[in-house]
Length: 176
Image 1 (cartoon, rainbow, N blue to C red):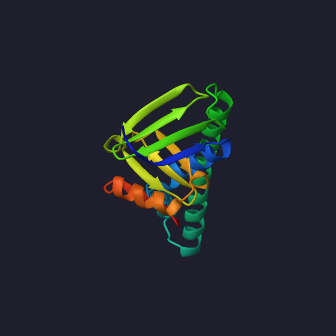
Image 2: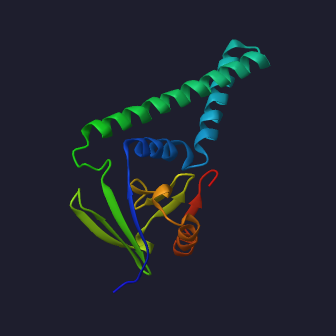
Image 3: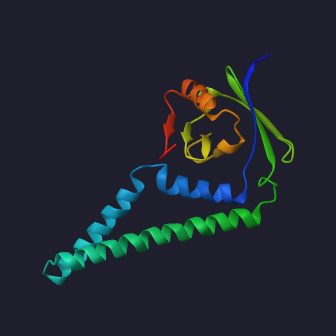
């Protein structure tokens, strides 16, 4: 029988899911915003070149405008995806309590409302990200499970435990 070092009861509310979508979209990969800025820069340069003369002020204005439009378009998609998930949720995932038991070799997961349970070895988890509010366990590159820090009794001890278990795949995002 596996000894459990941490037993955490957590849940994901609709607002948690929305925050997660924004984190995953903009901050999971540190290059997302710089790439959008680079594309805005290149688009602005193309506009300047077609006009035949380069002027710094219009170049900067168009670059900023293109960046803002691109970010707004991505935010619109995130909001659309969030609304779609929230309105089509038939599983009762939002607000239901998940119990996670962290042992020496495995994490046991259980959610009574969703009638689900399972067990994963630590090496089966693709990546672990820590944000200001969450520990995000990526089961695959596109499937994740959240643990809200406000549901963890001793965040510092839990963080240390996770850093040891996920030495190669643990990352911090932003200010933690």
